[in-house]
Image (cartoon, rainbow, N blue to C red; front, side, top):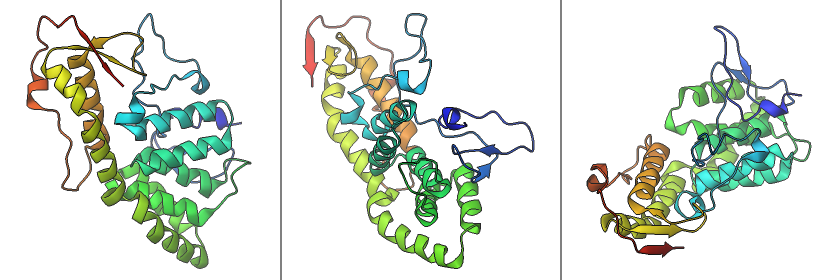
Length: 258
């Protein structure tokens, strides 16, 4: 009966724990549960927030720029529609693109056995939690430590073996560099249009053309937030010229960006 709150933030009173996974007496931590929502269109009077996870609208354009955010959003929608297997599949896609919230949610899902369609696997859950904790998020580290302490010696050995294999695909040294490279490769056209003060139509982002300057700022801000705690050598940063105030006038020509 706790499933409806799995993706929601959990407000805690002092000294109380929060069950961070649904339908289970699982690992509990003091802190908020991960919000796997992407950067959706901002809620306004004309665009209110969704009533439930299944009503979330995932912006297709994010798949090409920030796929970790996009697939995490799709996981949230699948969860709201009680599609357990698809939820896990979308979380794994997001995890491939270095989304630590997705890796954390996978860890809880497998460790606690949240979904009927996805068998419980405590060693696999701990392996996912270890990957989620590598950026030193205090909540994720606390959860990982608590889960690891509950494994049997045999399960701990299995978790270590799984983690060693999974880190070759999902650890930041690989996954975040992959995600940053993807962003850097796809943002160029938007940056060029913004530099030229153009209006662009970005398929899957909005139903009509918008200021490339505004879109570039939003995408760079989200990328910076996604990769802020990455300790590697590849860094995404907003171009200095984007920090300036948007030019007063904009070209009337709409440049399609697919």
